[in-house]
Length: 508
Ligand code: ASP
Image (tube, rainbow, N blue to C red):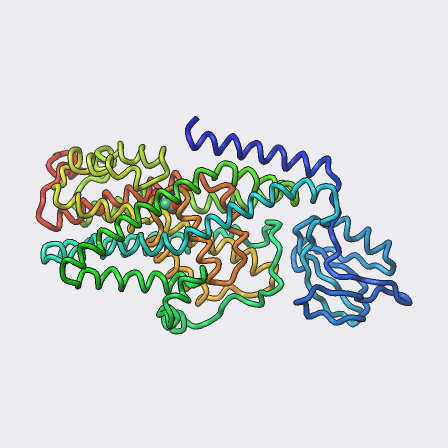
Protein backbone atom coordinates (compact mmCIF):
# COMPACT_ATOMS: atom_id res chain seq x y z
CA UNK A 1 0.00 0.00 0.00
CA UNK A 2 1.39 3.44 -0.87
CA UNK A 3 2.23 5.83 1.93
CA UNK A 4 -0.67 8.12 1.12
CA UNK A 5 -3.21 5.33 1.30
CA UNK A 6 -1.77 4.01 4.50
CA UNK A 7 -2.14 7.43 6.09
CA UNK A 8 -5.71 7.79 4.86
CA UNK A 9 -6.69 4.35 6.19
CA UNK A 10 -5.22 5.11 9.63
CA UNK A 11 -6.77 8.56 9.56
CA UNK A 12 -10.24 7.09 9.01
CA UNK A 13 -9.57 4.48 11.72
CA UNK A 14 -8.64 7.30 14.10
CA UNK A 15 -11.85 9.14 13.32
CA UNK A 16 -13.94 6.02 13.92
CA UNK A 17 -12.31 5.04 17.21
CA UNK A 18 -12.27 8.64 18.48
CA UNK A 19 -15.93 8.99 17.52
CA UNK A 20 -16.82 5.71 19.25
CA UNK A 21 -15.07 6.81 22.47
CA UNK A 22 -16.91 10.11 22.29
CA UNK A 23 -20.24 8.26 22.02
CA UNK A 24 -19.80 5.29 24.32
CA UNK A 25 -17.27 6.17 27.01
CA UNK A 26 -18.27 8.47 29.85
CA UNK A 27 -16.27 11.66 30.13
CA UNK A 28 -17.11 14.68 32.25
CA UNK A 29 -15.22 17.93 32.14
CA UNK A 30 -12.97 18.53 35.12
CA UNK A 31 -13.65 21.76 36.99
CA UNK A 32 -10.69 24.04 36.18
CA UNK A 33 -10.83 25.59 39.67
CA UNK A 34 -12.00 24.25 43.03
CA UNK A 35 -15.22 25.85 44.31
CA UNK A 36 -17.01 25.36 47.61
CA UNK A 37 -20.38 26.34 49.05
CA UNK A 38 -20.52 29.58 50.97
CA UNK A 39 -23.67 31.44 52.12
CA UNK A 40 -25.59 32.28 48.94
CA UNK A 41 -22.91 31.61 46.35
CA UNK A 42 -19.84 29.50 45.66
CA UNK A 43 -16.34 30.74 46.48
CA UNK A 44 -12.96 29.83 45.00
CA UNK A 45 -11.37 27.14 47.18
CA UNK A 46 -8.34 26.04 45.14
CA UNK A 47 -6.69 27.18 41.92
CA UNK A 48 -4.04 25.79 39.58
CA UNK A 49 -0.50 26.76 40.57
CA UNK A 50 0.25 29.41 37.97
CA UNK A 51 -3.21 30.99 38.08
CA UNK A 52 -3.77 34.59 39.14
CA UNK A 53 -7.26 33.97 40.59
CA UNK A 54 -7.64 34.84 44.27
CA UNK A 55 -8.89 32.33 46.79
CA UNK A 56 -12.16 33.07 48.57
CA UNK A 57 -13.78 35.33 45.95
CA UNK A 58 -17.48 34.55 45.31
CA UNK A 59 -18.24 33.21 41.83
CA UNK A 60 -21.80 33.48 40.53
CA UNK A 61 -21.93 32.42 36.90
CA UNK A 62 -20.24 30.65 34.07
CA UNK A 63 -20.19 32.22 30.57
CA UNK A 64 -19.95 30.15 27.39
CA UNK A 65 -18.76 31.54 24.02
CA UNK A 66 -18.06 34.98 25.45
CA UNK A 67 -18.11 37.76 22.88
CA UNK A 68 -19.76 35.64 20.20
CA UNK A 69 -23.34 35.65 18.92
CA UNK A 70 -24.14 32.49 20.86
CA UNK A 71 -22.83 33.81 24.20
CA UNK A 72 -24.66 32.15 27.11
CA UNK A 73 -24.57 32.99 30.83
CA UNK A 74 -25.32 30.16 33.26
CA UNK A 75 -25.83 31.48 36.79
CA UNK A 76 -25.32 29.11 39.74
CA UNK A 77 -25.76 29.23 43.51
CA UNK A 78 -24.98 25.70 44.59
CA UNK A 79 -22.51 22.97 43.68
CA UNK A 80 -25.33 21.08 41.93
CA UNK A 81 -26.14 24.04 39.65
CA UNK A 82 -22.46 24.47 38.93
CA UNK A 83 -21.88 20.83 38.02
CA UNK A 84 -24.93 20.93 35.71
CA UNK A 85 -23.61 24.06 34.01
CA UNK A 86 -20.17 22.50 33.61
CA UNK A 87 -21.63 19.36 32.02
CA UNK A 88 -23.35 21.42 29.34
CA UNK A 89 -19.96 22.72 28.11
CA UNK A 90 -17.72 20.95 25.61
CA UNK A 91 -14.34 19.58 26.55
CA UNK A 92 -11.63 21.84 25.16
CA UNK A 93 -13.93 24.85 25.22
CA UNK A 94 -12.90 28.05 26.91
CA UNK A 95 -15.26 29.25 29.62
CA UNK A 96 -15.34 32.40 31.70
CA UNK A 97 -16.18 32.59 35.41
CA UNK A 98 -18.01 35.69 36.60
CA UNK A 99 -17.43 36.93 40.13
CA UNK A 100 -19.99 38.67 42.32
CA UNK A 101 -18.39 42.02 41.50
CA UNK A 102 -18.75 41.42 37.76
CA UNK A 103 -15.11 40.55 37.03
CA UNK A 104 -14.47 37.64 34.66
CA UNK A 105 -11.63 35.16 34.39
CA UNK A 106 -11.02 32.52 31.83
CA UNK A 107 -10.29 28.80 31.99
CA UNK A 108 -10.14 25.92 29.54
CA UNK A 109 -12.17 22.79 30.13
CA UNK A 110 -10.17 19.60 30.19
CA UNK A 111 -11.38 16.03 30.43
CA UNK A 112 -11.71 14.67 33.93
CA UNK A 113 -8.67 12.40 34.22
CA UNK A 114 -10.63 9.98 36.39
CA UNK A 115 -13.33 9.45 33.76
CA UNK A 116 -13.58 6.27 31.65
CA UNK A 117 -12.88 8.13 28.47
CA UNK A 118 -9.68 9.64 29.81
CA UNK A 119 -8.36 6.22 30.75
CA UNK A 120 -9.14 4.79 27.28
CA UNK A 121 -7.44 7.77 25.67
CA UNK A 122 -4.27 7.49 27.75
CA UNK A 123 -2.35 4.99 25.52
CA UNK A 124 -3.14 7.04 22.41
CA UNK A 125 -2.03 10.25 24.11
CA UNK A 126 1.15 8.46 25.21
CA UNK A 127 2.08 7.47 21.67
CA UNK A 128 1.04 10.83 20.20
CA UNK A 129 3.30 12.60 22.72
CA UNK A 130 6.28 10.37 21.89
CA UNK A 131 5.70 10.97 18.20
CA UNK A 132 5.66 14.73 18.71
CA UNK A 133 8.86 14.59 20.76
CA UNK A 134 10.55 12.61 17.98
CA UNK A 135 9.58 15.31 15.49
CA UNK A 136 10.96 18.00 17.77
CA UNK A 137 14.16 16.01 18.20
CA UNK A 138 14.83 16.37 14.46
CA UNK A 139 14.55 20.15 14.32
CA UNK A 140 17.99 21.51 15.23
CA UNK A 141 20.22 18.93 13.48
CA UNK A 142 17.98 19.06 10.44
CA UNK A 143 18.14 22.85 10.06
CA UNK A 144 21.86 22.90 10.73
CA UNK A 145 22.85 20.24 8.21
CA UNK A 146 20.30 21.21 5.56
CA UNK A 147 21.32 24.87 5.49
CA UNK A 148 25.07 24.36 5.74
CA UNK A 149 25.10 21.74 2.99
CA UNK A 150 22.82 23.98 0.90
CA UNK A 151 25.08 27.03 1.26
CA UNK A 152 28.28 25.15 0.49
CA UNK A 153 26.47 23.90 -2.60
CA UNK A 154 26.42 27.52 -3.82
CA UNK A 155 30.15 27.17 -4.50
CA UNK A 156 32.71 29.93 -4.62
CA UNK A 157 34.13 30.02 -8.16
CA UNK A 158 33.33 33.19 -10.15
CA UNK A 159 30.96 31.38 -12.48
CA UNK A 160 29.23 29.70 -9.58
CA UNK A 161 29.01 32.93 -7.65
CA UNK A 162 27.14 34.58 -10.50
CA UNK A 163 24.78 31.63 -10.87
CA UNK A 164 24.46 31.43 -7.09
CA UNK A 165 23.44 35.07 -6.75
CA UNK A 166 20.81 34.84 -9.49
CA UNK A 167 19.44 31.59 -8.11
CA UNK A 168 19.30 32.92 -4.57
CA UNK A 169 17.48 36.08 -5.66
CA UNK A 170 14.94 33.95 -7.52
CA UNK A 171 14.43 31.68 -4.49
CA UNK A 172 13.91 34.51 -2.02
CA UNK A 173 11.73 36.61 -4.35
CA UNK A 174 9.32 33.80 -5.27
CA UNK A 175 9.14 32.55 -1.68
CA UNK A 176 8.31 36.05 -0.45
CA UNK A 177 5.56 36.46 -3.05
CA UNK A 178 4.17 33.07 -1.97
CA UNK A 179 4.20 34.06 1.69
CA UNK A 180 2.49 37.37 1.02
CA UNK A 181 -0.19 35.54 -1.00
CA UNK A 182 -0.74 33.26 2.00
CA UNK A 183 -0.77 36.19 4.41
CA UNK A 184 -3.39 38.08 2.42
CA UNK A 185 -5.65 35.03 2.07
CA UNK A 186 -5.43 33.97 5.71
CA UNK A 187 -6.32 37.53 6.74
CA UNK A 188 -9.24 37.65 4.31
CA UNK A 189 -10.67 34.21 5.10
CA UNK A 190 -9.70 34.17 8.80
CA UNK A 191 -10.12 30.40 9.26
CA UNK A 192 -8.93 30.46 12.88
CA UNK A 193 -11.16 33.24 14.16
CA UNK A 194 -13.81 31.95 16.53
CA UNK A 195 -12.82 28.35 15.68
CA UNK A 196 -13.35 25.65 18.27
CA UNK A 197 -10.23 23.55 17.98
CA UNK A 198 -10.35 22.04 21.43
CA UNK A 199 -6.80 23.19 22.10
CA UNK A 200 -6.40 24.45 25.61
CA UNK A 201 -4.87 27.82 26.22
CA UNK A 202 -1.60 27.68 28.06
CA UNK A 203 -1.57 29.00 31.61
CA UNK A 204 1.91 30.40 31.22
CA UNK A 205 1.05 32.39 28.15
CA UNK A 206 0.10 36.07 28.42
CA UNK A 207 0.53 37.57 25.01
CA UNK A 208 2.21 36.91 21.70
CA UNK A 209 5.77 38.09 21.88
CA UNK A 210 5.18 41.66 20.89
CA UNK A 211 8.71 42.81 20.36
CA UNK A 212 9.43 45.24 17.54
CA UNK A 213 10.87 44.12 14.27
CA UNK A 214 14.26 45.53 15.24
CA UNK A 215 14.19 43.33 18.36
CA UNK A 216 13.50 40.30 16.22
CA UNK A 217 16.53 41.13 14.08
CA UNK A 218 18.73 41.63 17.14
CA UNK A 219 17.55 38.37 18.65
CA UNK A 220 18.43 36.53 15.45
CA UNK A 221 22.07 36.84 16.42
CA UNK A 222 22.89 34.20 19.04
CA UNK A 223 24.99 35.18 22.04
CA UNK A 224 25.83 31.57 22.60
CA UNK A 225 25.46 29.07 19.77
CA UNK A 226 25.09 26.10 22.07
CA UNK A 227 22.32 27.77 23.99
CA UNK A 228 20.59 28.39 20.65
CA UNK A 229 20.96 24.70 19.77
CA UNK A 230 19.48 23.86 23.14
CA UNK A 231 16.12 25.54 22.56
CA UNK A 232 13.74 24.71 19.76
CA UNK A 233 12.38 28.22 20.03
CA UNK A 234 15.70 29.70 18.88
CA UNK A 235 15.29 28.55 15.31
CA UNK A 236 16.17 31.93 13.84
CA UNK A 237 19.47 31.91 15.70
CA UNK A 238 20.28 28.41 14.46
CA UNK A 239 19.46 29.44 10.90
CA UNK A 240 21.55 32.60 11.20
CA UNK A 241 24.54 30.66 12.50
CA UNK A 242 24.17 27.94 9.86
CA UNK A 243 24.09 30.49 7.02
CA UNK A 244 27.27 32.14 8.35
CA UNK A 245 28.99 28.83 9.00
CA UNK A 246 28.21 27.58 5.48
CA UNK A 247 29.41 30.85 3.97
CA UNK A 248 32.72 30.70 5.82
CA UNK A 249 33.30 27.09 4.87
CA UNK A 250 33.34 28.39 1.32
CA UNK A 251 35.93 30.99 2.33
CA UNK A 252 38.21 28.40 3.94
CA UNK A 253 41.11 26.93 1.96
CA UNK A 254 41.47 23.28 1.05
CA UNK A 255 41.83 20.62 2.42
CA UNK A 256 39.61 21.91 5.26
CA UNK A 257 36.97 23.23 2.94
CA UNK A 258 36.51 19.89 1.20
CA UNK A 259 36.56 18.05 4.53
CA UNK A 260 33.87 20.27 6.02
CA UNK A 261 31.79 20.22 2.84
CA UNK A 262 31.74 16.45 2.70
CA UNK A 263 31.19 16.24 6.46
CA UNK A 264 28.05 18.38 6.32
CA UNK A 265 26.81 16.71 3.16
CA UNK A 266 27.22 13.35 4.85
CA UNK A 267 25.58 14.59 8.05
CA UNK A 268 22.65 15.89 6.03
CA UNK A 269 22.25 12.52 4.31
CA UNK A 270 22.20 10.81 7.71
CA UNK A 271 19.63 13.29 9.03
CA UNK A 272 17.43 12.68 6.00
CA UNK A 273 17.58 8.94 6.67
CA UNK A 274 16.84 9.45 10.35
CA UNK A 275 13.93 11.74 9.54
CA UNK A 276 12.60 9.27 7.00
CA UNK A 277 12.74 6.62 9.76
CA UNK A 278 10.77 8.80 12.19
CA UNK A 279 8.33 9.76 9.48
CA UNK A 280 7.52 6.08 8.89
CA UNK A 281 5.53 6.49 12.08
CA UNK A 282 3.31 9.16 10.55
CA UNK A 283 0.28 6.92 9.86
CA UNK A 284 0.26 5.72 13.49
CA UNK A 285 0.99 9.23 14.80
CA UNK A 286 -1.94 10.60 12.80
CA UNK A 287 -4.13 7.76 14.08
CA UNK A 288 -3.32 8.42 17.74
CA UNK A 289 -3.66 12.17 17.36
CA UNK A 290 -7.06 11.81 15.77
CA UNK A 291 -8.31 9.38 18.41
CA UNK A 292 -7.12 11.86 21.04
CA UNK A 293 -8.66 14.94 19.39
CA UNK A 294 -11.96 13.38 18.36
CA UNK A 295 -12.22 11.36 21.58
CA UNK A 296 -11.86 14.51 23.65
CA UNK A 297 -13.65 17.15 21.64
CA UNK A 298 -15.73 15.49 18.92
CA UNK A 299 -15.96 16.43 15.27
CA UNK A 300 -16.52 20.19 15.61
CA UNK A 301 -12.82 20.79 15.00
CA UNK A 302 -13.07 19.72 11.37
CA UNK A 303 -15.02 22.75 10.25
CA UNK A 304 -12.23 25.25 10.95
CA UNK A 305 -9.65 22.70 9.77
CA UNK A 306 -11.53 22.43 6.46
CA UNK A 307 -11.47 26.20 6.09
CA UNK A 308 -7.76 26.23 6.88
CA UNK A 309 -7.15 23.59 4.17
CA UNK A 310 -9.16 25.62 1.67
CA UNK A 311 -7.08 28.70 2.46
CA UNK A 312 -3.83 26.79 1.80
CA UNK A 313 -5.25 25.29 -1.39
CA UNK A 314 -6.38 28.68 -2.69
CA UNK A 315 -2.96 30.22 -2.00
CA UNK A 316 -1.16 27.31 -3.70
CA UNK A 317 -3.48 27.60 -6.69
CA UNK A 318 -2.81 31.35 -7.03
CA UNK A 319 0.93 30.80 -6.83
CA UNK A 320 0.98 27.96 -9.39
CA UNK A 321 -1.60 29.32 -11.80
CA UNK A 322 -0.77 33.04 -11.74
CA UNK A 323 2.47 34.04 -10.03
CA UNK A 324 4.86 31.43 -11.40
CA UNK A 325 3.39 31.51 -14.96
CA UNK A 326 3.84 35.30 -14.96
CA UNK A 327 7.44 34.88 -13.79
CA UNK A 328 8.00 32.34 -16.59
CA UNK A 329 6.46 34.64 -19.16
CA UNK A 330 8.32 37.78 -18.09
CA UNK A 331 11.75 36.47 -17.07
CA UNK A 332 12.14 33.26 -19.07
CA UNK A 333 10.04 34.47 -22.03
CA UNK A 334 8.35 31.12 -22.41
CA UNK A 335 4.81 29.85 -22.66
CA UNK A 336 3.88 28.62 -19.16
CA UNK A 337 1.56 25.91 -20.48
CA UNK A 338 4.28 24.38 -22.61
CA UNK A 339 6.65 24.51 -19.65
CA UNK A 340 4.13 22.75 -17.40
CA UNK A 341 3.70 20.06 -20.06
CA UNK A 342 7.46 19.64 -20.31
CA UNK A 343 8.02 19.22 -16.58
CA UNK A 344 4.81 17.26 -15.90
CA UNK A 345 6.64 14.00 -15.00
CA UNK A 346 8.44 15.84 -12.18
CA UNK A 347 5.19 17.39 -10.93
CA UNK A 348 3.43 14.02 -10.90
CA UNK A 349 6.32 12.43 -9.01
CA UNK A 350 6.27 15.29 -6.50
CA UNK A 351 2.55 14.73 -5.97
CA UNK A 352 2.94 11.04 -5.36
CA UNK A 353 6.05 11.14 -3.14
CA UNK A 354 5.46 14.38 -1.16
CA UNK A 355 9.21 14.84 -1.33
CA UNK A 356 11.23 17.32 -3.39
CA UNK A 357 14.40 15.36 -2.65
CA UNK A 358 13.01 12.04 -3.81
CA UNK A 359 11.70 13.77 -6.93
CA UNK A 360 15.08 15.39 -7.66
CA UNK A 361 16.41 12.80 -10.15
CA UNK A 362 13.19 13.01 -12.17
CA UNK A 363 13.19 16.82 -11.98
CA UNK A 364 16.77 17.07 -13.25
CA UNK A 365 16.11 14.64 -16.06
CA UNK A 366 12.92 16.37 -17.22
CA UNK A 367 14.21 19.94 -16.98
CA UNK A 368 17.30 18.98 -18.97
CA UNK A 369 15.83 16.57 -21.53
CA UNK A 370 12.30 17.89 -21.94
CA UNK A 371 12.87 21.51 -20.90
CA UNK A 372 16.10 21.91 -22.84
CA UNK A 373 18.02 23.61 -20.03
CA UNK A 374 21.80 23.08 -20.01
CA UNK A 375 23.31 20.54 -17.64
CA UNK A 376 25.40 23.30 -16.04
CA UNK A 377 22.32 25.22 -14.89
CA UNK A 378 20.24 22.15 -14.02
CA UNK A 379 22.92 20.57 -11.89
CA UNK A 380 23.33 23.80 -9.99
CA UNK A 381 19.78 25.10 -9.59
CA UNK A 382 17.80 21.88 -9.04
CA UNK A 383 19.66 20.20 -6.15
CA UNK A 384 19.82 23.50 -4.27
CA UNK A 385 16.19 24.22 -4.99
CA UNK A 386 15.09 20.85 -3.64
CA UNK A 387 16.16 21.83 -0.13
CA UNK A 388 16.22 25.63 -0.14
CA UNK A 389 13.49 26.83 -2.48
CA UNK A 390 10.08 25.89 -1.16
CA UNK A 391 7.38 28.35 -2.15
CA UNK A 392 4.53 25.99 -1.25
CA UNK A 393 6.03 25.25 2.16
CA UNK A 394 6.66 28.96 2.77
CA UNK A 395 3.05 29.97 2.23
CA UNK A 396 1.80 26.97 4.15
CA UNK A 397 3.94 27.90 7.20
CA UNK A 398 2.52 31.39 7.13
CA UNK A 399 -1.10 30.27 6.84
CA UNK A 400 -0.77 27.46 9.41
CA UNK A 401 0.87 29.65 12.06
CA UNK A 402 -1.51 32.57 11.58
CA UNK A 403 -4.50 30.20 11.59
CA UNK A 404 -3.44 28.91 15.01
CA UNK A 405 -2.54 32.41 16.21
CA UNK A 406 -6.02 33.62 15.19
CA UNK A 407 -7.54 30.84 17.26
CA UNK A 408 -5.37 31.55 20.31
CA UNK A 409 -5.95 35.29 19.92
CA UNK A 410 -9.67 34.57 20.23
CA UNK A 411 -9.49 32.41 23.34
CA UNK A 412 -6.71 34.28 25.10
CA UNK A 413 -8.03 37.69 24.22
CA UNK A 414 -5.02 39.32 22.58
CA UNK A 415 -4.52 41.14 19.28
CA UNK A 416 -2.60 39.71 16.41
CA UNK A 417 -0.58 42.81 15.56
CA UNK A 418 1.11 43.71 12.30
CA UNK A 419 4.49 43.20 13.96
CA UNK A 420 3.44 39.68 14.93
CA UNK A 421 2.46 38.98 11.36
CA UNK A 422 5.75 40.39 10.02
CA UNK A 423 7.59 38.11 12.41
CA UNK A 424 5.66 35.17 10.98
CA UNK A 425 6.59 36.26 7.43
CA UNK A 426 10.32 36.28 8.23
CA UNK A 427 10.10 32.99 10.08
CA UNK A 428 8.09 31.36 7.30
CA UNK A 429 10.78 32.34 4.79
CA UNK A 430 13.57 30.99 6.97
CA UNK A 431 11.58 27.87 7.80
CA UNK A 432 11.07 27.13 4.13
CA UNK A 433 14.82 27.50 3.59
CA UNK A 434 15.57 25.29 6.58
CA UNK A 435 13.03 22.56 5.75
CA UNK A 436 14.37 19.44 4.11
CA UNK A 437 12.71 18.11 0.97
CA UNK A 438 10.97 15.20 2.64
CA UNK A 439 7.34 14.48 3.56
CA UNK A 440 5.99 16.60 6.42
CA UNK A 441 9.23 18.56 6.85
CA UNK A 442 7.16 21.74 6.69
CA UNK A 443 5.16 20.63 9.67
CA UNK A 444 8.31 19.98 11.71
CA UNK A 445 9.41 23.53 10.97
CA UNK A 446 6.03 24.85 12.03
CA UNK A 447 6.66 23.47 15.51
CA UNK A 448 9.71 25.70 15.73
CA UNK A 449 7.86 28.83 14.60
CA UNK A 450 5.10 28.22 17.13
CA UNK A 451 7.75 27.73 19.79
CA UNK A 452 9.49 30.97 18.80
CA UNK A 453 6.20 32.86 19.11
CA UNK A 454 5.55 31.12 22.45
CA UNK A 455 2.35 29.55 21.13
CA UNK A 456 1.54 26.02 22.34
CA UNK A 457 3.00 23.50 19.86
CA UNK A 458 0.02 21.15 20.29
CA UNK A 459 -1.57 23.14 17.46
CA UNK A 460 0.92 21.63 15.02
CA UNK A 461 -0.16 18.16 16.10
CA UNK A 462 -3.71 18.99 15.15
CA UNK A 463 -2.61 20.23 11.72
CA UNK A 464 -0.65 17.01 11.26
CA UNK A 465 -3.94 15.15 11.18
CA UNK A 466 -4.84 16.77 7.86
CA UNK A 467 -1.34 17.42 6.60
CA UNK A 468 -0.80 14.80 3.91
CA UNK A 469 -3.06 16.09 1.13
CA UNK A 470 -1.65 19.58 1.67
CA UNK A 471 1.88 18.18 1.66
CA UNK A 472 1.33 16.51 -1.72
CA UNK A 473 0.17 19.78 -3.26
CA UNK A 474 2.76 22.03 -1.66
CA UNK A 475 5.50 19.66 -2.83
CA UNK A 476 4.17 20.03 -6.40
CA UNK A 477 4.38 23.80 -5.94
CA UNK A 478 7.91 23.54 -4.53
CA UNK A 479 9.12 21.42 -7.43
CA UNK A 480 7.33 23.55 -10.03
CA UNK A 481 9.02 26.65 -8.64
CA UNK A 482 12.42 24.90 -8.80
CA UNK A 483 11.89 24.09 -12.46
CA UNK A 484 10.81 27.69 -13.18
CA UNK A 485 14.01 28.79 -11.40
CA UNK A 486 16.07 26.73 -13.85
CA UNK A 487 14.19 28.26 -16.78
CA UNK A 488 14.68 31.81 -15.52
CA UNK A 489 18.38 31.36 -14.71
CA UNK A 490 19.04 29.56 -18.01
CA UNK A 491 17.39 32.36 -20.01
CA UNK A 492 19.37 34.98 -18.12
CA UNK A 493 22.54 33.08 -19.05
CA UNK A 494 21.61 33.45 -22.70
CA UNK A 495 20.37 29.88 -23.21
CA UNK A 496 17.55 29.27 -25.63
CA UNK A 497 15.43 26.70 -23.93
CA UNK A 498 13.18 24.22 -25.66
CA UNK A 499 9.89 25.93 -25.08
CA UNK A 500 11.14 29.14 -26.65
CA UNK A 501 11.89 27.36 -29.90
CA UNK A 502 8.30 26.25 -30.13
CA UNK A 503 6.43 28.75 -32.27
CA UNK A 504 3.19 28.12 -30.43
CA UNK A 505 4.87 29.29 -27.29
CA UNK A 506 4.80 32.96 -28.11
CA UNK A 507 1.06 32.99 -28.47
CA UNK A 508 -0.24 32.60 -24.93
N1 ASP B 1 7.25 17.76 1.52
C1 ASP B 1 7.76 19.04 1.13
C2 ASP B 1 8.84 18.88 0.10
O1 ASP B 1 9.50 17.88 0.08
C3 ASP B 1 8.29 19.81 2.30
C4 ASP B 1 7.17 20.15 3.23
O2 ASP B 1 6.81 19.32 4.07
O3 ASP B 1 6.61 21.22 3.11
O4 ASP B 1 9.04 19.75 -0.70
